[in-house]
Image 1 (cartoon, rainbow, N blue to C red):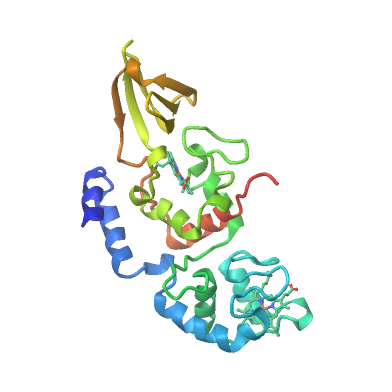
Image 2: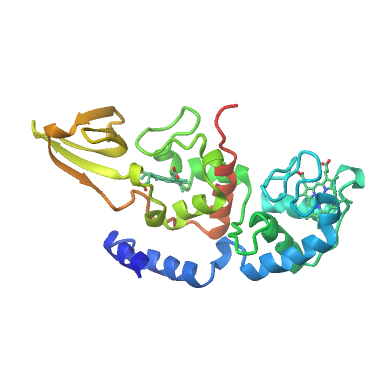
Length: 260
Ligand code: HEC
Ligand code: HEC
């Protein structure tokens, strides 16, 4: 109930879209993520066919932790499909002829972190995701990555290390529920009648720090402000990209782990 209410308040243009997505999320995950039936089926396949080598926690093959999503070369779901169906390392990882349901299931189980109640987000191709980020998705118009791009939105250079796939998906599909308290847009009027809009970075009892709309870092003393409004509405609109494209974007965001 709460979620629906907050969406209705969250801006006229996006209401129809968000409500549809919201209902979809509550009942069935749609094709942005695997179903719990798939995860369940995958857990059986895993126990019967994979656990022997990879272990019940998925961490017994050197350099690989299936439960945590640590692989040698694979990153997207298609990569996993290829390794499972084709084998790897001269047959030390054998090729399996699973049917599509079993194959989807075992990938879902891995993506859910081996948790039958987990969320198994589809993870697409990082290269295509990068192209979407700078192109059609227009993400680079607001977000900074590895030193390039504006500062008005959060810097995403390390986002892959900071957020789970499920959290990233939520930021794209349901930004209102993903909005971190500290990131909220603010509108401020000072005693000198300057109007400042921006994104809050930090705040204590006496001061507030923000990035203003000209990308300047500002620190303001609250006693000097005549208005200080914190918006509950995210800057993000729920994405209109197709679910495959969302999967590709998540695949790309997960590769952003800071400059190493
Ligand atoms: C006979 C032992 C064995 C079995 C059974 C097995 N694997 Fe593997 N698997 C391996 C080995 C060894 C590697 C490491 C290959 C390498 O060195 O690149 C591996 C690697 C992988 C990788 C990582 C590939 C990469 O590029 O990072 C995935 C994913 C994987 N296995 C999934 C599975 C799944 C799912 C099953 C069950 C359907 C399974 N494995 C069954 C031995 C096995
Ligand atoms: C109009 C500017 C704008 C555009 C375009 C935009 N974002 Fe954002 N994004 C923001 C802002 C501002 C936030 C902080 C939360 C908020 O206000 O919604 C944010 C938050 C995020 C977060 C959450 C960050 C965190 O710390 O968890 C992710 C992930 C993200 N955006 C990814 C994307 C992707 C991918 C695209 C392209 C499909 C995109 N954004 C397009 C402005 C934008």
